[in-house]
Amino acid sequence: MNRDYVVGLTSDAAEPDGSTDFGDIGLERLTAAGLTWRLLPAIPPHGPIPPSALDGVDAVISLGHIPFNASLVRQVPRLRHIARFGAGYDGIDPVALANEGVVLTTTPTGLRSPVALTGLTMILACANRLLENHLITTRGQWNELRGKRRGIGIQGRTVGILGFGSIGSRLAEMLGPLGATIIAASRSAGNSRARSAGVEVVDPLTLAERSDFVVVTASLTDQNRGMIDAAFFAAMQPHAYFINISRGGLADYEALRDALARGGIAGAGLDVFDPEPPAADDPLLAMENVICTPHALSWTEDFTRDVSALVMEAVITVSQGTIPASALARDALDPVNWRGAVTVGA
Image (cartoon, rainbow, N blue to C red; front, side, top):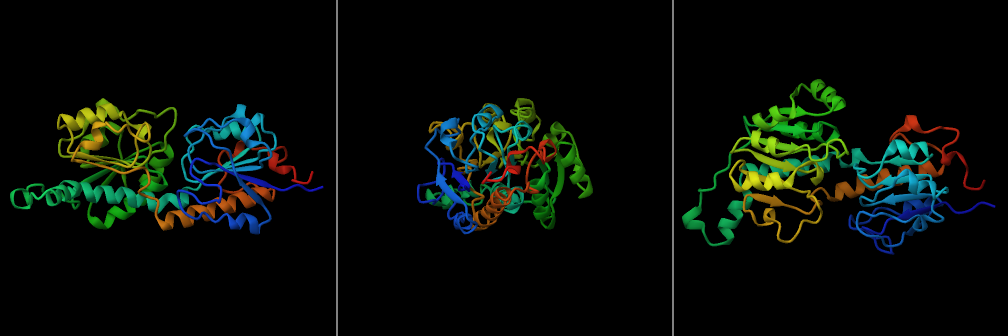
């Protein structure tokens, strides 16, 4: 007798009716495909998720950054697919999951333009000292401070993109018409992408030294956590800006606070923190030359539409016994023995 194919929706960013922090993610597409969805039990932010929460679940749509490891999925033999609503997979080892027969999919193409636009927004806001000029106006300091917070502009400036993947390369495309010079530092795959786009590849410290704007778009891994350290900030110029739109864990934020406090850099634009949310008394939140947003600046209508479509497509594809192109660590999945090769009715 056939059973339902059940998709669990993580409760860290969703309600029982299927509404989410991102808006309508199109759960009706699952229903139309004959799948059943349900909200998983509440868990602490960033997990961990107990195995019991996944009882009777074939797939999980992970809206936040919940860790899934090999030990967990071994205890849930029915689970065959984790579909991340986004590009990051912090706390998840794709190869370890693939070795257990579980598919991990992400949606990097849906994020590409919205997150790149977040980077461009931060660059323009910093270049024109938007926050400082906003405060001058709203505090009634028009007469005494008008024109005293002049920006540095974009044309002829150097933007260093740290992590030249899909998002970094899209940001470079957006910046090109504005007359900026682009340099990059990235892993080997990103370096190849940068060179083919005519972008000079340098080491991270050289990027820090030469950039008027440093924009972080790299993925967070165990290997690069905290790679943007005190030495990196010390290498930056006093007029330069640091912008992080990727993950807070990539940077030493105490070193960033120190660089800002001593005037080592001109300011920052931060859509991500470590931890999240930042403490209410974090000095970064009170600095007038630091733009802070709640890791959501890219959550536009375009973002929700495109990412939702990719997630639902992946879930439906796996439910039909096919490994989708968006699967990570595909080479580690045995096409015969992976869990999805067993039909739901078997």
